[in-house]
Amino acid sequence: MKNLYSGIRGTADLSPSETALFLDIVDKSREVIERFAYEEIVLPVLEEKGLFEKSVGENTDIVERQMFKIEGKDIVLRPEGTAQVVRYFLEKSLYKQHDFHKFSYVGPMFRGERPQKGRLRQFYHIGAEAIGSRSFYVDAELISLCSAILENIGVRKFKLRINSLGCFRDKSRLSSFIKQSLQEHKSKLCPDCKRRIRHNPLRVIDCKKEQCRAVVKSLDFKEAHLCKDCQRDFRNLLNFLEETGLKYVYDPYLVRGLDYYTNTVFEIVSESLGSQNAIGAGGRYNNLIKFLGGPDIPAAGFALGIERIMITLKESPPRYSIPVFVAYSADADSNAVYGILSNLRKSGINCDSDYCGKSLKAQMRNAQRRGVRFVVIAGRDELKKNKILLKDMKESRQEEIDIGVLAGKLNSFIKEKKGD
Image 1: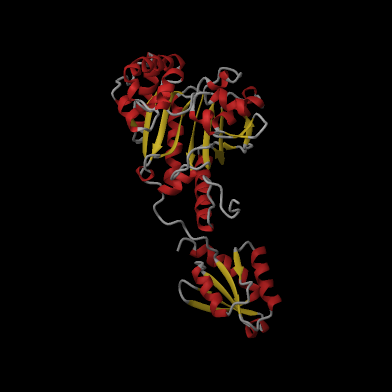
Image 2: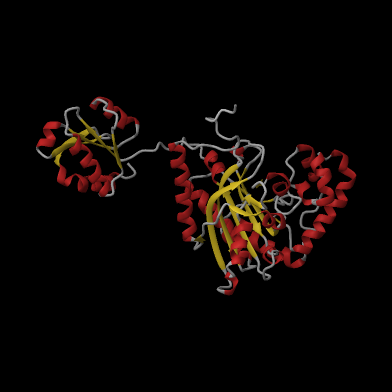
């Protein structure tokens, strides 16, 4: 019988300290996203299978073998967020309300991949989508937003890789060129790429297997497939990135693994992640809305992987800590002690106490282990006088104060000592 106390392979439990880091990443991301005026939306994890088959591509790895399907239904757990945002945009007919929209989202995605470091079957994305403009300044804004989020979180060492697939016609020309060029190298490719040549040649470029990468590197196409308009827009984008101080690496072999991409594609990568080195990625999908039955409206977006960001933060995850702990002696009035605890919480102070009857000494050790800054010590004699001892654990200093002013004093101390 399967061990019911083991988690499902490819999923992860987050400890309190890891959860604190996770939430810190989300909070700091939202700070920056709001600064760039993207509005957050919350969408369901269940979607129609056909949405991703049509948008992501039937011959992509995601659709062919990675989607989690609900048995007996044409419903899947969402593998990515962009197609879902477009579905929401079309279902609500938002193009009739305004000509330009900016959305963001945070939530779990699901793919049936082979679990590896930083690649889980349930993972979390922070994403942003800008719908309604072909301007290369939108591409630049999204790249700038990505960088600003990572810098605000504390990720320092990352690189931007960028390319242009060109418009729909350019991309078709590139696909045909690759298909023809790879025929003579077919024997050197992995079984998956031999099949991809027929159905989706661009996926060969995205293969991570060494023998396939070596073949792809021997092809020389760079920007040859781009029309004049797409070349101009891409050059303008790169020039603007340089002017604004955003460093990049031009990579003509970057295509991304989703069929809806056109024009600009980019990845944010970190060396600390190993072979699966992308922290996030994005680009333009100018034809997707029309392809799904909507008007001809251009769009662009990106997604960052929270688990991968957590790996790149080399510092140990912060300990989950509270600022105040209420400790008490064995002979103290329990109702008075827990009354103090209750009043502090009503005053907006995060605090905790002991519920296991430990000695005062053990309670103090517990507070120290948890990184608590202030300990309220309630003894029988002090409580009789309606007083407590307040100890600053960092400065090893304590004073006797009235219970009535405790919440006010703690709020001022916490505000004053924040960041110490």
